[in-house]
Image 1 (cartoon, rainbow, N blue to C red):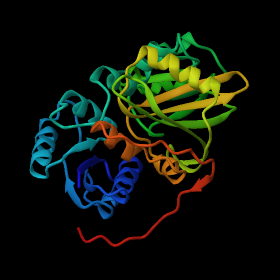
Image 2 (cartoon, rainbow, N blue to C red):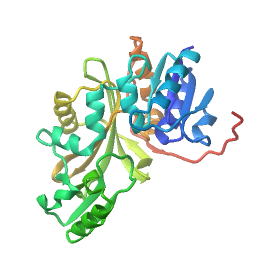
Image 3 (tube, helix red, strand yellow):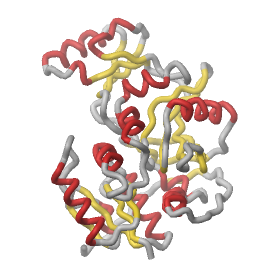
Length: 313
């Protein structure tokens, strides 16, 4: 039985990844910086780790020791702040993750915009300190580096300057970007698994019907369509991926807007799994050059419900 390290089991991505892998027959080691992480109830063994910080030697030492002492065969990091650490110290950490170059671009929303906006449709974006460079009726203000819906605010045309002034007083205006707000359209998350040649092995789109905190609570898987395939092909020409990735799009009458790319499993990966496609298991099998079949993606609506458990670990 292989042992897989799954980080961030207090969040949706890590929690569902650990749950799926355990149901798939793996021994799962879970980590989180919160001792009350819900995922400790679904793993074989849980470890409390230091929070991820830039150049975090403490966390790196813990992870290296954990991989050796628990005989970890592969790891699937799920915390954005940890991704660069895992990418940088591969293959020591045995991580199924993209390169430091790709991870670094994807984690910085402004860098991602600059890398891809000439190749795929994206909301107009600029640094908040240069808010006057774009002019729309409605805007999204968000951290350049961040995840989910944390610290995201919305503003109309007159509110942008007010927001910029407020953040300048906190000396963090250059840490934020302002984007054209796409008001109409359907939101999609696309769960993708890439092989070592930057080719998508699995493309599993799902419509985000209801979201809480930036994570799908109700979703419906759908078949991949031509415009989506073309957009992903253009993205693949500019960035090289490996392992699990999720991309978020909004589709409206103007086209298919790329919103962000996360080089990890998504918080809604359980929806794709419930519809018959087990990306965490495929990622591990691919890592070890094992063959696997790709089942047909069902197009059912999946509801995520709360579950109460006692935890003794």
